[in-house]
Image 1: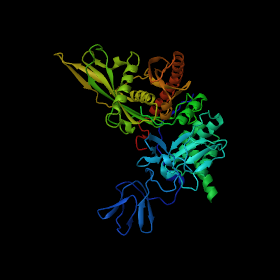
Image 2: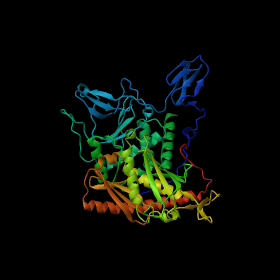
Image 3: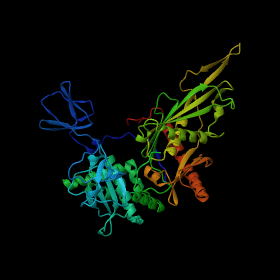
Image 4: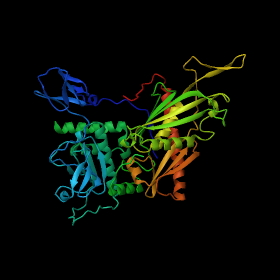
Length: 248
Length: 291
């Protein structure tokens, strides 16, 4: 059995480890952004007493004459074409209420159940992350080479599940596959889950390449050790390194 | 307790994982999540501690006040527990929602401390039948992430270790009236010995096996749990079963043995951490809430 107790360590600001030269202008609600009235107000700002004030916490973004503040932690705002993973909370007469980490519960009509692209999920693990950390990509369904599959919902719900052996044509109706998942698959899924959690704590964007690099960087460590703060920092640092090399 | 909605398939996945000793986050059945403990975080208390166990965050403050001893125990002081489940922890605790859980936890704390050896109550007596120290232990639940009882008991033990009670002297006049004099020196105080203070180990039965330190999702898959309160020497002071399901006597015995084993390691780690923190001295860097 393992038991570890430690004293808390003050958190290091993320930008220090990134070594950014330009410091972003961070604001909190109530901070004055500028007293120059020539700018157009974007999201996250409002005009008060002759100056532009922020209403959310985050970095200030400026595009020519438009100033807006990009919120770090918000609920999910849906867009057309997004993939979302939701949890069904209520069953009503003709529709299902779905929880998607947005401001209101979503609604799923029974008639739209058989449309392509929508499916009910079986065994697996759900990880909840801030929606702003999920990168927008062409496809959100990834079969990772390590042996598990991942669905990155734009709403911050990430579903990790064992790769199905063969694609079956469902005759109709849904029967969850409740057979025990093999130990090897389980290890991969747990490792992926811990990697995603570490990427989120270090505020890295989540997409298939970053998750895969993080997985490979974590292989020398035991699965349960990945959640220790120092191991987490180490593997995310390595992931960042590899991603920079790949781009540059 | 705060509950989380899970689908049948997710529950099956968790149960099968526990059977094979590989939980969702990679831990084994007897592994704890990483615990962070810090004492002396609240300045206007006699002792305080904050414990973070995964997503569970507990703050305990101890205040020592003078009062009259209880009638049936005139030579001893006593402890009063109060647990506040703040609405910050989870939306279910809004308004009066957290009161039931709060009283349940407080009653459990009363039970585990209700024996002669946990805390030396005689040292809290100032003058028999007249004055004694009453320790008000207030527990605040900041965040609820599963395994509340364990985290609370660790925090209570750490806060009691950190408690400093000022030394008092009883002066008697010629007329016989007593006067209590508080020592002027703020460092002149008595400390409690927390060697025999028990800690709670919660064992949740999932499928055919039991796990220690369950997360919210694992608690949702478990029908019955056993709370075992263990001292550092492995002595069980109290046991309680929670949950709708049933436990057969063999399981109870196995869970109790696991609880004793795990409890001893828990105490050893906590003891060494508290001593290490104390050896850093009063000039150590305090992290507190904004760290």
